[in-house]
Picture (cartoon, rainbow, N blue to C red):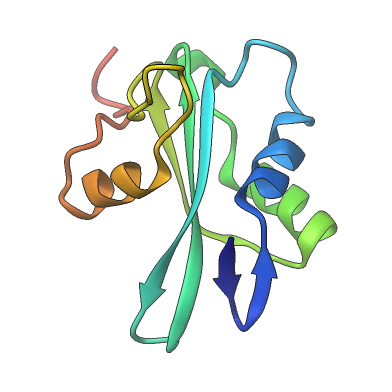
Length: 116
């Protein structure tokens, strides 16, 4: 459960809404998390999206349009990652808490526009 601006949201609902807008196989993993924003005094939404290559990058404006229509939300940041970057359990489920910790410590392998 994510609490953003005092409202409750299920991470799975947010993730499913974004997944539903893309062709099958385009997104190889997704995680919605909240991180405290001291300037706003509340948690804000971050989305981690795994993609098979940079060719599949999804514009942040497109993701936020989906979030706005479905939930009245926008992501503070949409982080594009290489496939299989997000930590998973032995059964393949994404471990959101560990993903959040990796992000906060600068340890996620984001797609960079200066690399292939």
